[in-house]
Structures are given as structure tokens and as C-alpha cells.
Image 1 (cartoon, one colour):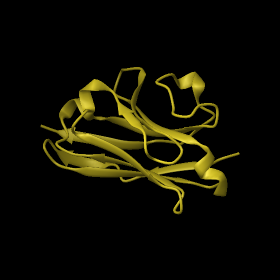
Image 2 (cartoon, rainbow, N blue to C red):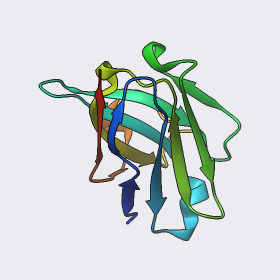
Image 3 (cartoon, rainbow, N blue to C red):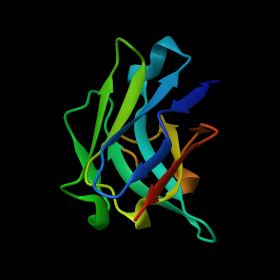
Image 4 (spheres, rainbow, N blue to C red):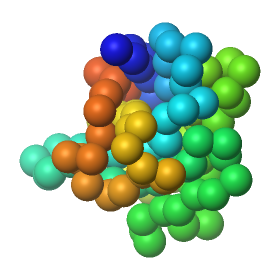
Length: 125
């Protein structure tokens, strides 16, 4: 069992930067591909970004490319989401997720084994 705890959310203005963190409880963290998802108000949860187990491969949903960066520190058992130039449409609860089934996470929720509880990001215009 892996516990994931997100932090770093908050209320920011459009154009600001924010860094989310997701701390894992298990020392085998490096065995897991990690991803970020988000769920906006009244919307389904959607994929945001994924990173493979050693951090040398990543991909993003189109709407955040060039603004968000996913990274990980296996020694600290933490995955990050650096969010730059945020927009009101980025307002959502952000979740991290872990999977041991794939080299790099997919965009499908069903492919993940563990989820955090989420952290709220609110972007004002």
C-alpha cells in the first residue's frame, strides 16, 4: 500500500506560479510511474501530466504544455507539478496517482493503483 499526500495548492491570480508536491509513504516509490490529474468544478477528472519511474520521460495534456512541468525526486519520494502562468481554467482539485503497471502512466484513471486526497488550486482572473 502506498499513501500519497498532496500539498501546495491555494488561491492565486492568473499569471502566477504554483508548485504542487505529492509525498509518498513507501521507499519503493521509484518503482512507480507517477501522474497528476485534476477535477474542475462540475467536470470529470482529467489527466494533466505523467512521468516515468526515473524521471527521464514525461508528457502533458495539450492545454498545459509549456506552462506546467512534472518532476520527481526519488530520494525524497516526492513528485512535483510546477505550474507557471496559471489561468482561471486551471482551477481544480489536483490529484497525484501512482501505477506500477506501466513504464509511464497513461491518461486513464483505471490504470492507477493509488491516489492522493487532492489539493485545491483556485485561479482568479
